[in-house]
Length: 172
Ligand code: PRP
Ligand code: MG
Image (tube, rainbow, N blue to C red):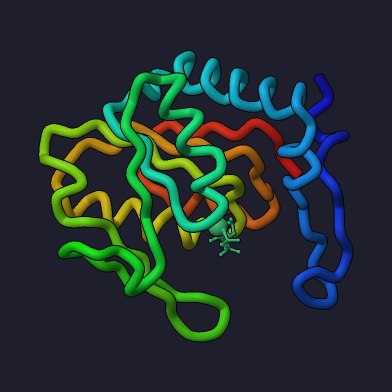
């Protein structure tokens, strides 16, 4: 299946000069959605990305993380923006183009013997994924790798990530 044909390109969103890769057109296609999740699962298994937990980042990581976790027989752990999680959290601040942002995980979400796979819809600069890796490091557990549906190669995001396997289903 040609997955790229299900991604809609929107010029000048969210600001002039940015070409937005819209996944909503893939998500609404029943065969495309099933194929994407099945392929994602296969690629993770092939690359040895077997984990106890899939960690996904708010908000588009919440779309692909849980079905992947289900297929891998893993649990799913949400990484949320500041102030959204109710129990005690670990936090990480990271740089944005303008200013900083903050991601949080529950302190009891992982243990030192957990194997973790970090999943998001897309990697651009790698800032979000790298911040999540730093958050996971606070638990002293094993990061087995990263999985993305889309990778924007020109931005070289994978250069900013720890040296573990990184898979993506589509490259631009
Ligand atoms: C987008 C995307 C990734 C991140 C990638 O999320 O879903 O999480 O950007 O960019 P990076 O590699 O440069 O960090 P966004 O922050 O737009 O929020 P959303 O998932 O809530 O839409
Ligand atoms: Mg996101």
